[in-house]
Image (cartoon, rainbow, N blue to C red):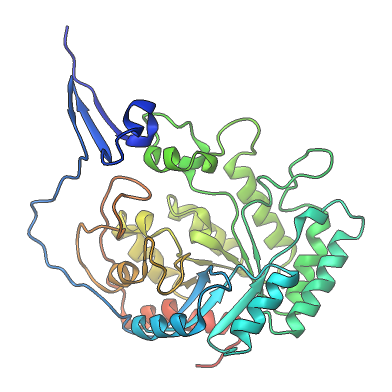
Length: 369
């Protein structure tokens, strides 16, 4: 008996198709195989491409190494109307020295550097106090904030092999010092919902997780996503004088109700929109209401940098924020990086757009216009 199955997969998912680099996505229906399946919409819709943001932009979520030429960055920033970039990959030691010398000293208003924590020292008895002193020294040299990557609470382990939670008391001196220095803490806690689910036919990010299997945190060896977010919330409640920024819509872009409750319950919490336009843009009614309601707490971010050649995001983000365009790609590369869907614009009012693009970030960072 013949039956029909509908299965969307990536060529790298099996050895038999990995030999064909041009296969791309494949659609199986019964016994038929359609290679490199890329359907094109028949809809006739207006296209409002936005090459430059309507207002100056502060990108609070970028990553770039010291090998990127400052002149190149400045040229691309001018083209895209990006006023300032916040490099969250400052690191510590020689890496931080190099970034400060190459970018911050060139233009401290345009290139803003955040430092990071060396968790290889987590078992040192004075870890928290030592890192707090590091923050003081970094701040004195021009570092504006602290970025915490998702490894805290997820993969950072102590010498006993235990995962170090975000709300570990060892971290308290760090959170406290950041508050004293008025250094915002941009924290990536947990990850998308799909990354904590089985990689099976029900997982909407099946394609992405097959490209990046190490991004999966499904299994008993990892804490639950909800547990990690709750650890973050406990820290924010315990340290009300420290400003926290939740990366990627606080990693709650699939549940804007939860994101809103976190903002309501924690006045010292704000979010950036980086790397979540795919999620936001497929729920345009909810996203627009969310942006308008929390217009003072949302900041622009891309998780890229101006001029990055792979998967550029700026123009797509501008189109999402500024237009009422329908059913367009959230990516500008050969494959959907997140999942198989299109997005819609949320045409924010000008007063909201200004806050998201630059006013909220400049207020948080203590920068004038």
